[in-house]
View: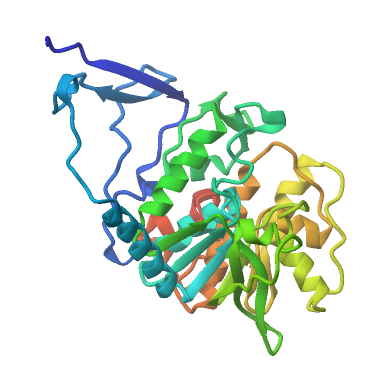
Length: 363
């Protein structure tokens, strides 16, 4: 077969990524991470492109006479079971449990994963992690991100359209580009494990402090009313981060449980939409709401009565980042909130990407 010509695809973005924020060039505590983002080709003035080249060579096997290597079915079963059970045993007692793998939860996991000394378990009730960040508003494709949260997109390696320095926002052409990119990076980290199709049914609480979560298969949780007692499992954690989103069948479950057991007085619910007020409020109010439990993302609006933000996503990312650093602070690890992280030491992946000129965000 004759070799086919090299195909080159370009995705547009008006702002180049800053080397200072390139987490592939260095890493916290020396954990080296290989870059999977292709080098940029030279761009014309006023235009920055991502060049992805694929040499269309023939596959390394014969497609006309292809056969897989033989395998016993029991080997497949053992490999799946052994690896999953090993992860369950490892994270039965872990450092941080993140409940909810939407944009805030994944951004939180992304920040935490940079410290290889911190073990992170993500519990997601859906088979598909990502929450509502696979699409934009009204099931449209584009994801709108208000500046300066675009700096986080630069760090993660997500391309976007930018109308220029006077524009207040950027647009990712499909929300799935952000979600798939950050998800793949988080899952590649050796200190993070995702348990999808698993629901957090309850909290472990000892002497007024949240000390972990009660888990069960999501399908079991949805059928407690149709079957006899199906007891759960547990994950103990030094810190729980609840990123369960706004109210719904599986939404805001963390704060609703805190109210039902008397650890918080009220959950007023989010107010009507106000994009400008909502995003600032969600980031500002991201905090440890009770000892051992940090809230991030739209669940913050539920307990604080903040406005809903609608189809803008920057606050989800930055709130998740802040939650990650709050968790690091609670664990006694270097973080960007209490001055324990030396911003001048050029460890860019531990700096809140949304902070202008690497200023530390307020806790």
